[in-house]
Image 1 (cartoon, rainbow, N blue to C red):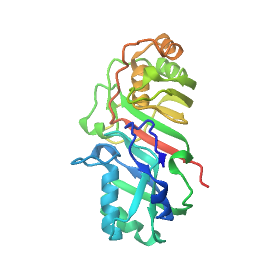
Image 2 (cartoon, rainbow, N blue to C red):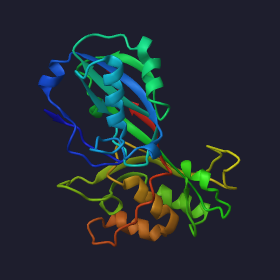
Image 3 (cartoon, one colour):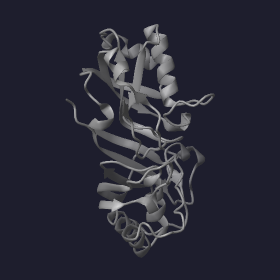
Image 4 (spheres, one colour):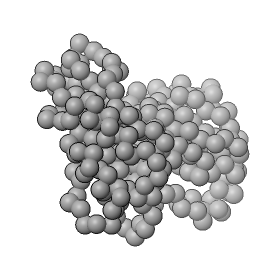
Length: 279
């Protein structure tokens, strides 16, 4: 058996284990590119009595395919309220199938909250989780006093934050390999907190610009090979409110008993891009 491990978006999970026997009994596999609006869901992972991305996908695939003899696995497990611009989901089936003719039917029944953008057949040996090479997250926020409630669909309202120049400086400190235990929610028996950040920056943006948009909107963009539970959202809080010294000392002395870094809200966070190594 192989275990799917979690990174940012953000439920740390030990579930979603697909056994070798299950894969061998379902020799046909297909890879979908996926987008979804996270505010509609309590995260990716199925939860009893709660709307989740995984749960809705399974229900719609059962309805359209007319059976439940399949398995799904996602490239990321985002937390409640976190959206996804570009991720992947893999399906395992016992029989070969042409999904192109029914892609429209799947999307129609997904009601626009989730969209399957494309599909391609993939080798049964393709391991989606191990094939993810890097992910980019974007966190959208504004400190404008004229913040319209409708804008909360896409970004977070925050007050009394650092200047743009200070936020840019703070973001740059995260680049490289670091022990991020001071910038994540520690759970379970995890012992490896080292992650590599390839790029981190803050900039003004006009993404999601509408008549309800605040005067200025900012974006924190971070790319890494993997992320810990709540890592991105704690990094966001740090760039908003910490000094460079406060960030440096937590990265340089991660095992010190630091005061817990608060977690920024989920509604500004988007899994922007997922890069996979296709066999």
